[in-house]
Length: 331
Ligand SMILES: O=C[C@H](O)COP(=O)(O)O
Image (tube, rainbow, N blue to C red; front, side, top):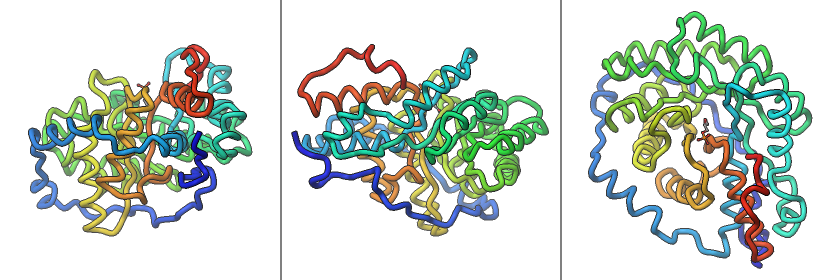
């Protein structure tokens, strides 16, 4: 077995890099209108990604450990209970069996955050106390974002008050579909202000935006309005995170960084449940945005069931055998 410590990324020991938070800028409609997305070229490029052997076998464990450190371990179900959230948080603290972590030289590895509905912020905070793992709350009438605007803003304020350090808001899809970019900008700006010190992730719900061009434009508008992260999906749309959408959003992030100097984070979410898909996403981030984005302050997976498969793969890396997937139920 190749030790991760040899040449791999010891995620748990990464120094925290502190970038200035994206303050946003005035809405630049010329830039928004100029944003284009060539669907066939993007789909061609995305189709080549999963087949490419961009991660050598000996580094796979290190990449999987990095993926774990970037997971927003999520439960967003109507039947969530404090008990379920406490179990998820225990998994967030110890995402991989201690003997495997020790064998890999990765003591102290945790996930990036735990993501819950507002009602579960308290139980999550209690279960994560002292761990340094932030609690993220979905907000603004998640997942549809169709409750009265005043209530959506109040929901953010209540979640921040309750102790959420990250707020995942949903944008109004109709503002994108009707080309109301000023309306989207104003809404996002208000959400960002309501978050205060809490970081805000803007969920675009890309599966409901119609075109990749709309995805590119909505990404730019949300960043101009001060989003700390842009996120693909709620996990509740019929189409969630995809590689073509990820390419479009990452290129918007790159363009925004080149123009303003500010780094905005990226969070693909929904339907990512296999370790090999996680590695494909990480490779794409590396190629499109560079190594600086391969850290939890700039990259997260929104996932409820990815961790179990990654743990299985790590177990295989250490022991040479696969365990049954039911043994990795939580996460
Ligand atoms: O933001 C996170 C998503 O809701 C998780 O989606 P998933 O359950 O398909 O992993």
